[in-house]
Picture 1: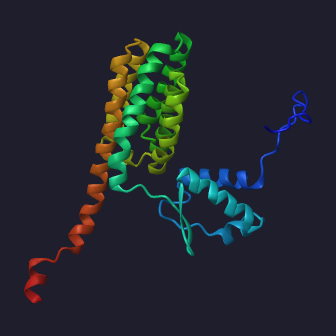
Picture 2: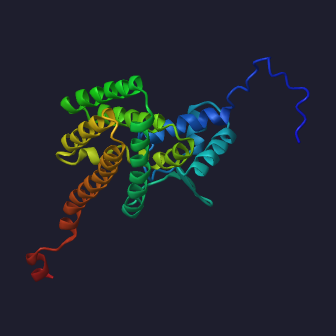
Picture 3: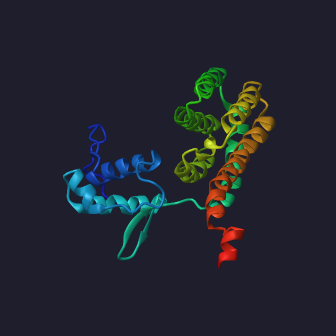
Length: 245
């Protein structure tokens, strides 16, 4: 057992944030905001130079992000930002839908009236961003809303599992919102969800949240298909090209 005899609990002394933790925090924010894009290699030397630090805290920070799954390390090449593939998304969203659905169910049953009213105000922020077609603002407000529902569930074990997967959801940064019509569908799903939460209908809230996550997956798949179609068309030889060949 560790010797705590010299520790003064009343001193209020707190260990300052170490340099590599600050670097990890900066890198994490850059990844979530897509200033470091999925698949992008991270230049340790350039970051160290930009931030006027040695490469050691950068390397230590990258180890933290590797453990979190935000970056992937390749021997002799370095680290790159994790990219969520189509297969990853197909497996991730159904699990997240189960977790967030349970968050909504428990939040409807456990949150106080005041907390639910506060959640309704967060929904109003979503409404304003949707009306303005502000996709970035909508994404940010949506993240706050979903995180708040998770918090209101007041289940630490559920929160732990949800937090671990939410990191990977954030790597997608709401890309599905760029699919035509998706923001209208999304805010409609949110309206039904907040209605169920305010009515304390846990079962309905859980089903709606689950469906909301699965609808995001379908929109993401449709968006990717639409993005890939022009590339496939360019690769496909025309009849005239075939004849000339």
